[in-house]
Image 1: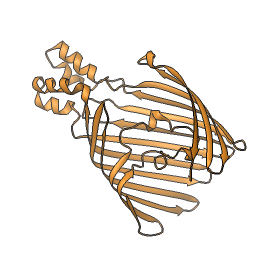
Image 2 (image 1 turned 45 degrees about the vertical axis):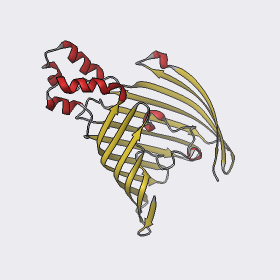
Image 3 (image 1 turned 90 degrees about the vertical axis):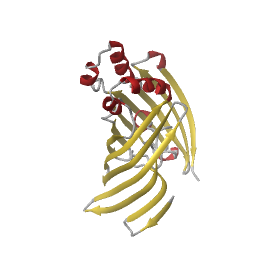
Image 4 (image 1 turned 120 degrees about the vertical axis):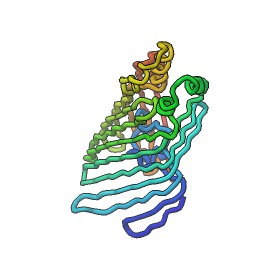
Length: 282
């Protein structure tokens, strides 16, 4: 990407950029910048972190408050072994306010999104021949307007800190149900040591979509299939992590944590994970 400093307050970037979705979006791949080994996956694990396009960054002061505004526009695309996702006409706006020990953040984003789950390709091909055309177009995830909303807050008194973020990802005109995610983290700074605790939750909306249209269909088997597909990407998980960071040097951090993961939809996914990491910047 390229960045042009239009003034002391405004910069314009063009190319492949990090979307300003989260508190640590800009430094997500730089583990040294935060106290965790990884940023909380319940909120941060989304398939659209990068943007091909433009971003405007503006920062200034209003009295004792410092504020940073970002506006991004472009496209994104991501392909894995399980799915492909594309977003066009992506618009993301964020604002961050800082006053001494308090930091507040809000973000709103929207895009025309197309999601293709490879495991459902044959199923949707069959739906296209069975369902009324207008309902099929409404149900499938093709060029549908999706929305991202996030709020964050942080209190940092240097000796201790508390912060959290909450996000919503929703595509009203598609079979995908809304996902809500949040985390709360707190820690102490004791010399070179930073012990912390983090609690994460990710949940999908329990309500089925398009119930009126589905109920009007003559086949009970087809109705059950349409409802079942809405649960394919559902989440109901919790994770609690105890972590410890040790700042070995000004550019080296040693970390360890233990996490207890609970999946209320599939208990076979329940697990306890112990991790160690070394973060080095130069």
